Length: 200
Image 1 (cartoon, rainbow, N blue to C red):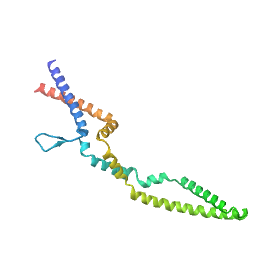
Image 2 (cartoon, one colour):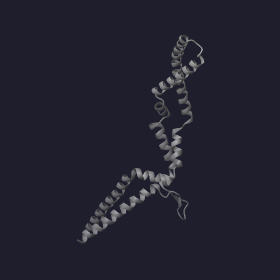
Image 3 (tube, rainbow, N blue to C red):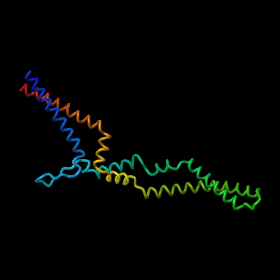
C-alpha cells in the first residue's frame, strides 16, 4: 500500500508538472507581449508571436497572394460575360435614344435604317472597347494593388492582444488537447519514476 501511495503521489506530481509546463509553454507563444528585461543581463523575454510578428505577417501575406488570391482571379469574378452583355445593351439603348432625339426631323423609314446600322456597328465596337478596357484595368490594378503587402500591413496593424484572442479562438480545442496531453504524459512518467524508485 505504501509503495502504491508513493507511485500515486509521484504520478500526480508528474501529471501536475506536465500540465503546468504545457500551459506555460502555450502562454509563452503569445506572452509577454511587451519585452521584459531579465535583471543583470542584456537579454529580454518576449512571446514568440510578438517577437516574430513581422516575419509571420510576411509569410501569411506571401501564401495568400501566391496560393489563394490573385488580382486576376478577383477581376475575373468581378466582371462576367453577362455583365459585359448588360453594359453593351445599356450603352446601345442610350446611344439609340440620343440618335432618335437628334433625328426627330428625319423620316421614320430613314431613321429606322440608320438606327439598325448604328446598332450593329455599336454592338461590335462596344464589346471590343470593353475587352480592351478590361485588359487595361487588370494591368493597372496589378501595378497598384499588392495583396501580399495589404495582408502584411493588416496583420502588423492588429493589436497583439486582439491577435492572441483570434488565434486562441481558432485553435482553442487543440491547445486544450496539448494541455491534457502534458497532464497524461507527466502522470505516466510519474508512474515510471515511482516503479523505478521502488525497484531500486
